[in-house]
Amino acid sequence: REGARLTADRAAQQRRLSAVALLGNTQHEIWNGMAKEYAEHGFEAARAVVKARTGKRGIEAIRGLRRAATDEETHLLGTRSAATEASVASSNAVILGSTLSAAALLAILGFFITRSIVAPLALLTEGTALIGTGKLAHRIPIKRADEVGRLSDAMNRMAENLSNTLVSADT
Image (cartoon, rainbow, N blue to C red; front, top):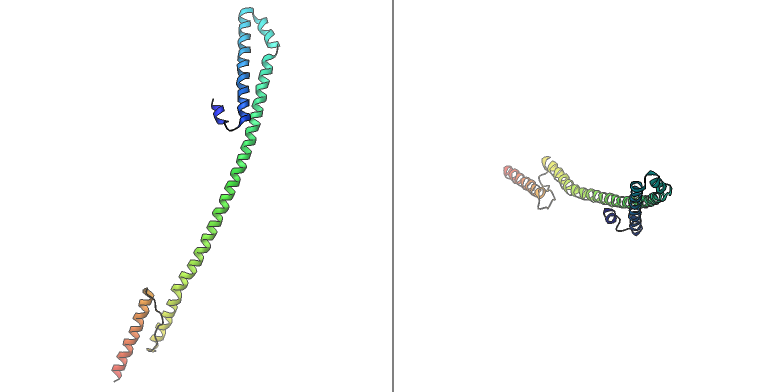
């Protein structure tokens, strides 16, 4: 029954299983007949049954069916293995492509994020250096609503206040 369940999707294997079951029953009957001959008529009668080679032909038929079933299962295993390998290769390609796409997207985003931070900081550094050299009229041209923009506004106010303080000290 287990063999029938495992091969339910393959009709040829089902037919082989049925044939093996029938041959097995036939072999069982031959062996029972041989035992009966031995019990009723002795060793020579049982030996005559063996010499008829009926049992051997049945065993050979069972072996042939087993070989055919094994060959079919081996072929099926190879086919399924190839399909599995193709599926794995396809999955690997999708994963690789997705990983490369994600890496490229992250690199592009990283570039723009870094540029949006570094460029204003460079302007801020340059403006601070100019104000530090005494050019109090210089204003840092950064208009942003984040920390860099607030720092730029603070530096511009500081330059304005220093300029006003120096003007009032001169007068």
